[in-house]
Length: 345
Image 1: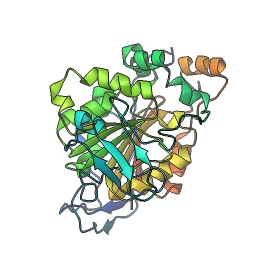
Image 2: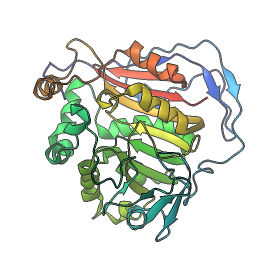
Image 3: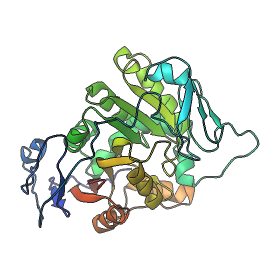
Image 4: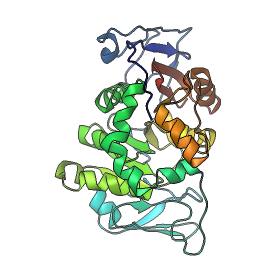
């Protein structure tokens, strides 16, 4: 997942391509664009482009209002509320000891010892679906085990600033979501989910992934950390193209190093748009398609699994995100690393 090229001095570009700035929770933002402190203090080169500013009035509700403890999860088939039976509370032990049932289609969803399975095929015995090789790769126990034990660290060679810095960058975008619900989609082994939960900045954090083994690794990392285990964190298995949440109920969505792995990025971002509330924020990171077009380790994996990852240019990512209905697109680029962000109108 990283190139073996020589280190390049970091030059980061910051592009603001839409200037619809929401006025949210009593905070009025004018047409001036605030550059996050982490950005200006590191001497990165920046480019800012803005044309006009239009204030968008917020909805008359508080953060997380639509996502109450008993009604955060929705049926991935019909998106109706799930009825819960089990211990109260929103944390890993309480959630995985609970059973959930759709009040409309009558389908039941249960935990798998450590995570709640909210995939459409949850509970099936005779039927299974084949998934793209890139999806199956990350369901591997070996890859899941190695993800935080050398795999993710190799991203630094392609310009990724490292998990701590990436977390700080995401937090700058998520300031408007403080006190609300954050979904860490394609969370992998929960590297950022744990950081979001431990920050105490959010009312609930959901670590969500399609890979059962990634979620098991996430649990292995938190099971001996009482501060995270008892925090408002849930582990959920779900498909990013069929997210088990109500429309307009989520305050922020994070997708770290995930876009290039999704079978259908357009479906996934459309789903993220659906679940975000007005003014909600989506932040993602991925590898850009540059020359060389992909990290060495990914090119080797392509040959082994016979399937190409979806690498995009900066322009393609912006087009994809805005075409799916999100606004206020921004991006920060360093070598082949990009962090991009956008908001629900």
